[in-house]
Image (cartoon, rainbow, N blue to C red; front, side):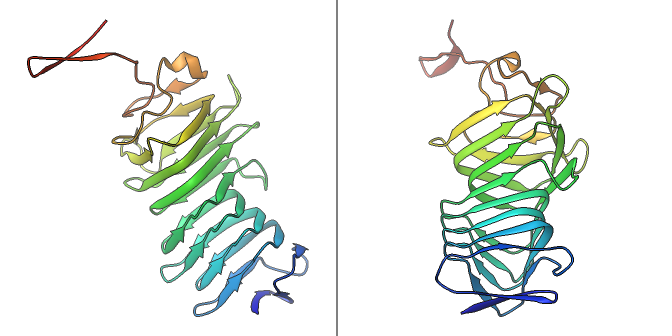
Amino acid sequence: RSMVKMHRLLLTLWASPLVAVCAPALCAGISVGQGASLKLNNSSVDLNCLDVNILGELNLGSGQLVAIDQLSISGVGDFLGGSGTVQFHRNWQNAGTFSPGTSVVALLDGCGAALSEITGDNDFSSFNAVTAAGKTLRIEAGSLQTFSANLRLEGVAPDQRLTIRSTIDGSQSHFVLFEQASQQINAVDVKDNDASPGAPIAPGPVALYASVDSGNNKNWFQQLLDVIFKDGFETAGP
């Protein structure tokens, strides 16, 4: 068995399904201590806007962690995504190891968080950042975020867009969308993001995506041109 200490509340997760709600009056979130191991199997835990801190090993299995305010993976922490679902509202901080499996990680509105950050390098399988209220997502400057299965970035035009920025103005963060991955992009405002050498993100005119290109981006909103190779030279076709 694996045990998670939630302040005065102690939950023991067995192989059978468990649905747990973390009451703020009783717990301070989930903390997996260094050297400890927790496997959720197919359990579902509602954090109710509290935090998840991983210093040991957390194996999501096919379970769900939802309504997280901030998720942190320490330098010695190991988070195994399995085929589960993670929903957070404010920050994702990775200084350790995240193994995505086929998991879905989603940044959603909630917990009063209008500003969110992703720090560290992360390999995501499916990543969603969706807002109906308008949100700014800051990506650590110089960090690399990869997306192997699906990337969904959506706001609501014209006033509640999902704004994507680097943590340092003028210094790019990096996205790589795998060639086989799908994408759904709508109502975003992007600046300081280099999405090469992966597949183009939101290929075509920026207006097609009800979005804004605020500059210093690469491999976003690229016009689709035929490429013709003649006599060893590359030219853009009609």
